[in-house]
Length: 109
Image (cartoon, rainbow, N blue to C red; front, side, top):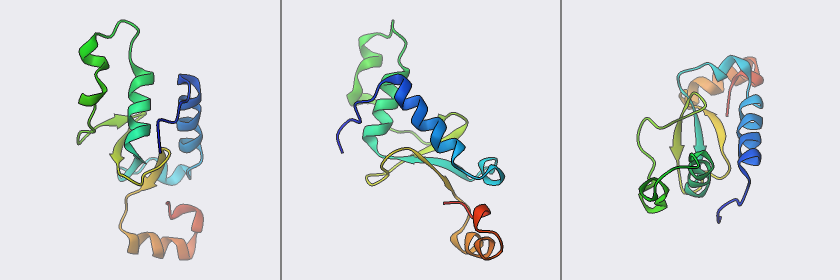
């Protein structure tokens, strides 16, 4: 996927929609994190640049995801097939399966 080509406002709306689309019970978990592809990561960085950013800050070849990167309160994981930014519940799959049996809404993605 190429750059999503969205405005800063559209990127922000996508992030808010993704955050609001998750169950409140697992939005607060320490294991919940963003997943997205590199194109979205760079689009978000680009949209976040201050108007007076210097050339070094604008050099997209230096924009590599780092462990601990945060976005709106959650860590970021960038993968080749991550797609649009979405929140993922990072609890172990077995635990999510047991939770899903009792209450599917609380199982997370």
